[in-house]
Image (cartoon, rainbow, N blue to C red; front, side, top):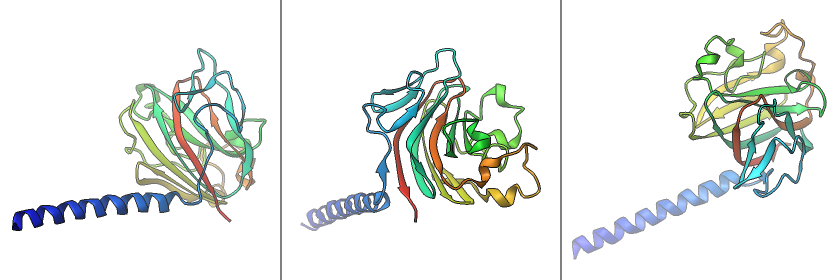
Length: 221
């Protein structure tokens, strides 16, 4: 009898734990809006030839070209962006923020690197070119990507001019891009887009296959 009561209590505790987990997840997602409907690229503009809606993912398959860029139709200011991505060996892409639709988003907007840090061909990159970095401006910590082929979860929090990048639960970048560049950028180039506080969000192709899913955003007041 005691064993039966103990077993029942164990089951109840497990159910309560699962219920709490779902409730917490729902609370964490409150206020978020999906940027991708899972079936087509409605709400996006740019290269819809290299970027495809496929099996609930946005897949860039450049087929020997650079791949170009795919941007949200809407412009965003301060926000929390969550998404998952899957790299292929040597994969290279970028997350454009506060970007106009024309020009190199790394300079006329801001680019957060999406990169296979483990690829041998990238061994000699500058620190500000690795995954999660604000390209040319603020370097990110390395060592938190999952093995190539596995899905990574990323969260980007932007409150101009502050930015935070969380990769698989670890903060790999946190800083103020205007403060970081006040005496010049790390790459020594002009980045007028650092002044922008509004613009499109985009995926920036660099010739490699990369997959994205569960893309959602919460705008901050």
